[in-house]
Length: 144
Figure 1: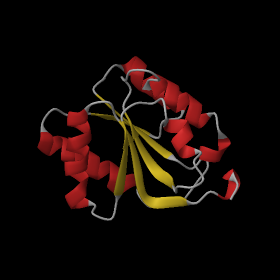
Figure 2: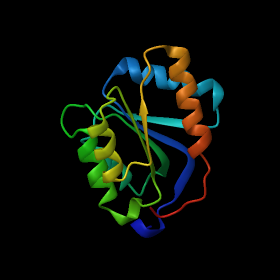
Figure 3: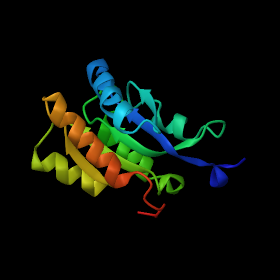
Figure 4: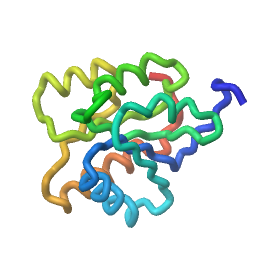
């Protein structure tokens, strides 16, 4: 199978997040509300392109991306993924603790589909994540 016919799994969500606490919170928040989803976690941005290009595994339809990570940060991941036309239909949701307008503008300019602030309160965090998945999950594939 070449990269152009690489299959996307609509129920696969790639979560790129360096915080183990946040990874566990994301898993807990979505496991009950969206049991059909399969979450795959990467602890940093260094392996994202390699993972997305792995033709032996299905491609995710949705990616949650943290901005502040060691190694390749979220901006680097966002820029690299959006530079590759093979990933044009991948929905990228930046999930971060930054609320600065410069970060928000930079992410949208780089091709983020959504920018979500990580609330500290778990109930609100769960509501925000569930709302994002409800909105973006199963939208028809569309180039950006």
